[in-house]
Each structure stands twice: as C-alpha cells, then as structure tokens.
Length: 447
Image (cartoon, rainbow, N blue to C red):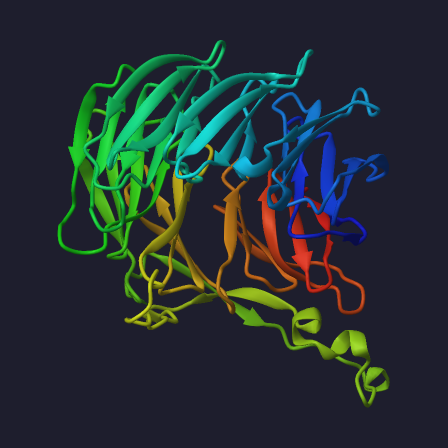
C-alpha cells in the first residue's frame, strides 16, 4: 500500500472524480484539483466564500462548489479553466445543491418561506435557469435518481400530506405524482435496477413502502409498532434484497419476489457461536533498542495515536463486545443499526450497531448468517466497500486504516509528520481522504 505526502484540507472536502483521474480538495475558499497519479496541481480556483460542499459532474468535466451561508453555487470547468458559472439564490436561501445524472443540470434546494423548492439550472449555454419545481420537503434522503439517470424521484409534503413526484430527467417533465401512506416521510431510494422505489417513514412509525415506476403500491412492510422504528435502509447491488436497519438492533432482509422478510440479523453483545470468526484489534508493543530511548520523548512520538501500532488477533468465543449505554432522556439515542452497506457483488452485508460502536458485523448473504465480527479499539466512524471487489475499508478516527476481505484483515498505519494523524475519513473508491487535527489529508491507493 502506497501513501502520498500530506496536503492541506478544510472540512473533509476531498473527492475523487468519477473517472478516477482527478482529486479535488478545498482549503477554505480555494478549490484545488490534482492529478491522481502524480498528485500535481492541475487547476486552482478561487471561490467567493468558504466552500461547504463540492461535487463532481458525472463526466468529470465540471465541479460544483456550494457556499450555503451566502446562498451561492459556483461551477468550474476543467476543460475551460477561465470559464465559470455562478448561481446566486439570494434571499431564497440555499440548503442543498447537487448534479443531475447527465452532468449538465444542477438541482438547488432553496429555503422559501414557508416552503422549500428545487431549481434545475443548465451548465450548458446559455447557462440559465431552465426549470423550477416548488415542493415542501427535502432531506438528504428526499431526492433520488435511477442508476441509468433516466428518472428522478422527489419527496414532497403539502398540506400535512406526503407525496412523491417522478420526473423524466431528459426534459424534467412530470411522469407520476402520487401520495404515500406515511405519517412523516423520512427517505426514498430507487432500487439499482430502477424498477422499484423504496419509501420509509419516520422513526416513530415503522413502515417501508415499495412502489413501482408508475406509482403503484407493490407492498408495505411493518415489523412492529409502538416503538422506535427504521434507522437505515440499503439496497443490494443486485436489487434482490432490501436491508432495513431498526432501532431494536436488528437488520431485516426483504426479498424482491414477495417483498416479505426472509430473515433478520440480530446483533448480540456476546458472540458464542464457534463458527463465527471474531477479529479483535490489539496494540502492538513497540520494540525499542536501548540506544533509541530518549527522555523526554520526542514530540512526534508523544501522542499515542501517532505512535501506537496495532494488529488483529482471532479471539476465542465467547467474546463480550464493548457496549454503550444510551442516555434515555436525550433525542437520537445511540442504539440500533446506524449504518449498513452491501458489497459490490451482493455476497456480504456490513452493519454497525450504534450501541456497540466499536464493532462491525459482516454477514454472508448467500447463507444468511453471521460471517465475521471485527472489534476495534475505538468507535467506528465510517466504512465503505471497494467498488470492484469484496473488500471493506474502515475508519475509527485514529492514525490507521483497516481493511477486511474474505482472506483476512489488516491494520495499516497511515504515515504522518509530527502531530498530523488522520482523525476521520471520507472513503472514496479504493482511496481514502482523511481529515486531521490540523486540516491535512492523505490519499492512499490499495495494491
């Protein structure tokens, strides 16, 4: 595994282009674009204010920079560096901005009073506002595109009622508009094949609804009532399974034939099955020669995160995992399945139970059983699958990156200089962009 040198970074804003050729990062109001192979700076753009969000167009020719505090979006071109587009939402207020799948339209979510709205802007000449779609609901789960880029589903709320509108992305014409049987819609997500739309309700009402492209209700699923419900949802890449993570600490798997539950995965705090492999991260004791001892220790070696190496050990069952007792009188309790993701071949499912924050469960979807548990020394902040193979990368906020594959797992020390040690990360493809205490990041490539 090879590591780059350390570069400046602000606010975890670091993204690889979809074609894998470029790396964009932000330092306050400056946007830096580098060549992935050489890490040489190709372009340096200056925005009007501190950047809060960046996003590449699907063809990697344009990059969007959003400045929510000022209601501004600036778009830059890699082919024509002297050109740029500026979208000023003014008093309407900007809360979100994203590309459409064709890479030539931008959808802005503006905060009207009292309604929100979406606008589609064209990044092609004459670069004007081409469509406005007022609505009354937007969250990060409130808009979703089919994988082929043909359709967009938009969640709306009007007169205390939830609706979904389906648009044709080529001309932004409304295809379907239907109400949903939800109390307070929390999210929507297309199946990877674009045939089914999953809609789920607020955590106070356990309900998953499956709709066809023409708005027909295919199925409704409710696991239980009168308790906190759905916390996370994920489709398998094959579209055969829908995984629903709940506050009760279970993942329920729905099949695409009957849309009924075929199994549920529990996340016990104690692993007793001898067929399950449990990897526990353990600190390595550094071997220091007598002549290498120094008093006081050098500043670079003083921090435990920067100096302590670790390894994985296979634990013997039973294994008691570290649990976190949730605070009962606070909102958003640290319980339930907070994150889940399928491997690109749909063979594995990785999950995290928020009240067992140091552990990652990996499930065998073919055999519908628990396969591996990884217990870290620190709480897991993020994890993501390699898009090309069943390999999982994990970040815990320390100076290491953890990789798991069916062949085993490894702890990789990220090299740093002085106090620079990665604090957290945004996983992208086979590379990791990680923040540090002093706003630096490192890019790594798997070999």
